[in-house]
Image (cartoon, rainbow, N blue to C red; front, top):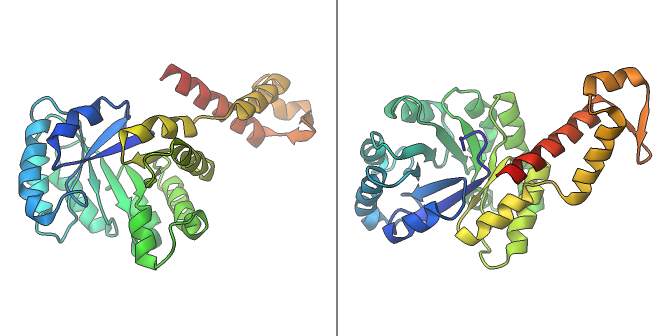
Length: 279
């Protein structure tokens, strides 16, 4: 799995080393050990040492560091930067391309950066962040963003921000962004619904806060049986060839005209279904 293709991203508190192995064995595509929001100020130094030790030994994962301008930012980077198990760094409150480039330069070559956009300014500058060359993917901090703008954490209130990240990622030639967390950890259908909605908006992954969320989130990003059946009918009717179909004249499937963009969408659905089956 890579930063471009990972769908499920599971947070684990950096102050809970007893949970690191469980998170790594959860089936999540990527594990993020959190040194920021999940760790109290007085515990940050000890958590940093535990995370660095884990990454220098049996562990492998991402680390959400503390943001630029905090007392812990530089120490976080110094502690984890040379660890063999470091798969990437998550930068919170991403707003400034200059700060993100500084993070990139402080890390060993090839270590990817996930920019967590959590504020109105971050959304406003999302395209600049995506085009900066300093990040490998964008993610949405929905809870902090809603707090920043004084909104409810509803689909409607957060729609503009989500769409802004999707468009910015496309403009910056980044992979589809990673959606924010779902706070319910007991009702699987909520994680599944949120993941399916995120996929429908153009997201390519989702942050998780509990191992139980991993499976429903992964399933939510898979096409439904109805979508797969529709895509299969489209490809059968057009021989699966988006270029050749345009020379056949109008082709109708289920009473709807099928042209090149429709065929490409059908191909994408089938490819996602096959990828999920292979995984």
